[in-house]
Image (tube, rainbow over all chains, first blue to last red; front, top):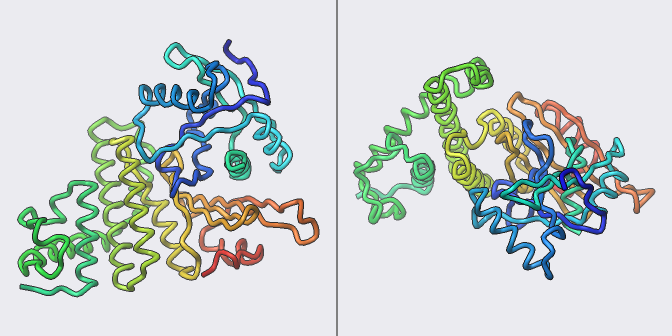
Length: 133
Length: 236
């Protein structure tokens, strides 16, 4: 359902382009939106209803392969929704309340977005930290 | 036979690497046989090197004519109003600037035998290749942002080699990090400014890291922002 809030206990995956990754380390720019985007694209993993994280990632890889020019040097960041929300809220200077919402399409039913994440470098860096934990 | 010095060879390699990305025959003689000459300076033919040298000098002269004319950069920002062919010409112009700047940095690094800078150039070429693979019609890396970044790192040679990435606008993003709570990252904008973020531990409250962010002219960044906030851990 479009705009459904993703529960804090769930996880999303973010495709990280090779230009945002160095030596397997995902840098904060992986979580930077283009000016034309209204939200940061992610995929809701639990929505897929698969039994393991590996199967979820494999499914997401299939979606990315159809939608994007996937490079072997790209990476997928998995972010816990609640942890990321709490970290950004408690540690960003404007106590930013980011929201994870389902935003499906026919080709990509688990597609979702991180809203209100724009866009100081601190929230970006905190999102990267959320990934690192 | 010519036995070019290391520096000359590095200049040659700089041109060759850029050609690999752009397939720019103007900078690299088509007559050069890669199997014997390109990767082995000991067997590089004198006429091959001379041909490359002439191309390099030509490129250098173009560079001196004004690599980053701000008026030209303004045109690019307004490119949505221009025709498709004009946009392609502008893209070519931006790419030429970028090629020349990367070559300039590479040659500078080679001349100084600066391995850290050479390593940075290799990373920049990788970023450029990845960006072009993703969108062949983009410039890959913003020349203004790269110039801004180069201006910063060339003035502060004692900084460690940062991790480098690109933003969605193809600007350079550099990040230094040690441990869990010492980070400073700089987003080099094309206009001479930089956005920065610093995370550092608090001496009085070890469980509460200090977080700072803002925007500053790149020229002021070290003296006004980074030194006062103690980034000595990022120095070599």
